[in-house]
Amino acid sequence: MTTDAPALLRLLAWLSPGFPTGAFACSHGLEWAVETGDIADEASLLDWITDVLIHGAGRADTILLRHAHAAHNDPARLAALAELARALAPARERRTETTDLGTAFAAAAAPWKPPALPEAPPYPVALGALAGAHGIDVDATALAALQGFAANLISAAVRLVPLGQSAGLRVLAALEPTIRVLADETRAATLDDLGGCAFRSDIAAMRHETQYTRLFRT
Image (tube, rainbow, N blue to C red):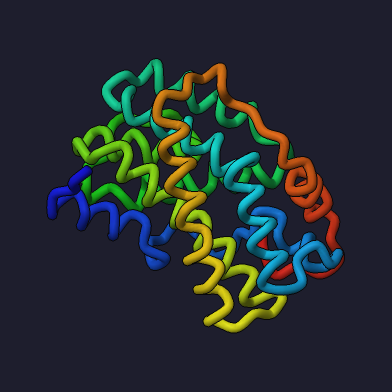
């Protein structure tokens, strides 16, 4: 797989921590997991994110991204994918997270002229459609999105546990094989393959809504 310079530059821009989507304010339920002791150190953080990637939103969002990439020039199909993505959210905060990030991403990506997107597009739908419209390789986009998702969760944990930056980087490096395998396994996935069983993570998202002290929105 090769990625040409314009495509690489766009992926680096769109998935940079500085791209104004508001992702820094989202912990994906991780804040509750830290409070309850599910995540207390480097090893438990690695286990938690690995499960979220393989069995939770990481896998589901990658499948949605791939289908949005293929449907970038089909507004009706994108609208159906957006509706499905919203319906799959297991908690109010998860739905808010993906639609707020998607809406902010679409607005920030205006200089790159994104395709017609439905109202409140879930994040993987917005990202996949924009990458498809620019002819950016879908495998590269999937890898970059998974890496960005994992990095954002690690950033939240570094602040919450707290962990040192070096520990966070070790976790990110350790996740590389999982990210590569997940990108490969979702390549031929259909919408019938959507689903998940990261139940503890889903419960974390539900419990976070009423957590007494919160630094993160989700």
